[in-house]
Image (tube, rainbow, N blue to C red; front, side, top):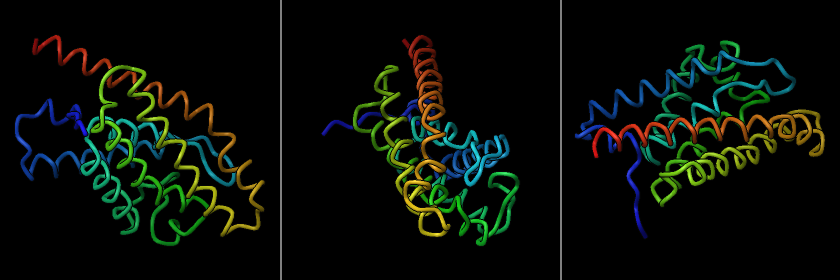
Length: 191
């Protein structure tokens, strides 16, 4: 199986622990900041987190992206206000958005895994690498919502998945455009 190089590996000559730690910290802070840009909706707000998670997965690769989102979750669990609306703590994570929060690490990992398996260049491939994991995020998100709220499964789907589909397509396209442009710029400068 062919393994493709994610953008951040191509950009940085060395893969030192310090560089990886800096990328994890930067990525987790970026996700935390993007959570504060939200449209209040019930029971799940619409934020820019999935856009940032797609960008991290598309550029970091599977392991580094997964670790970055685990760091983000650890920051929130420890009480840092990194979740939507400044939310934090274990109780917040156990609320209606808990399935999405836990699914973020899997989304980041899967996005990076798809990039490493050949979906690393070109808008169409990058779009698929971003969109498939973003779509699969609704599985744990909706199931969690269904299990911990009085909503039946149909209502959980209608409230926790349906309103976000157009946004998911747009965010995946934006992430793919950004990374396609970054690759084009890097290739132009490095021949």
